Length: 140
Image (cartoon, rainbow, N blue to C red; front, side, top):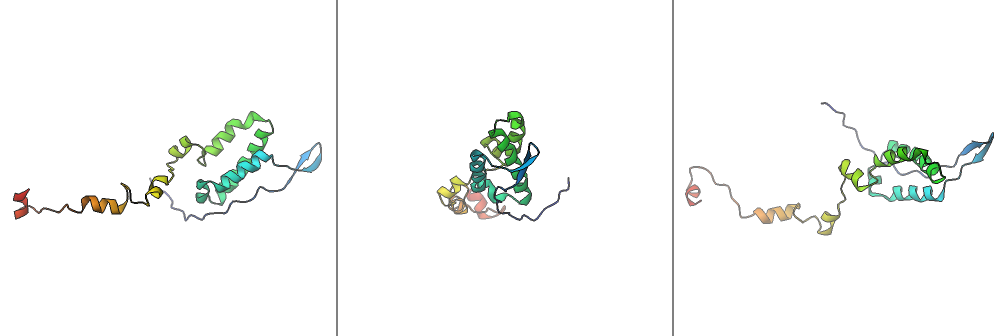
């Protein structure tokens, strides 16, 4: 099935915005719960954030509003919150489903472990190609 390849443009994480909401017919300054502010900072520092574009941050910002409602006691949006953070790889299960993996193992040995090119060269350095019909074939 054909697909479209997009040029990736990493976007910097925005700050949680200041805005007003209507309460009893009057506009009042919205205050982010401290738990949501901490949650937002966690996402900004997460390894996943290196792969977020502007649309990802916009979607996560909308998710922050749901998170704020949740931490203010409105649990009616808990399922939506869970679904939205899963799209960004919040849990081990989410990251596995999204085919995300941390690079700790490669970094620990400088990339020279069983998947490193240097290790492969050392392991197979003594192998040689045997062409049919040559003397090497008889030596086996």
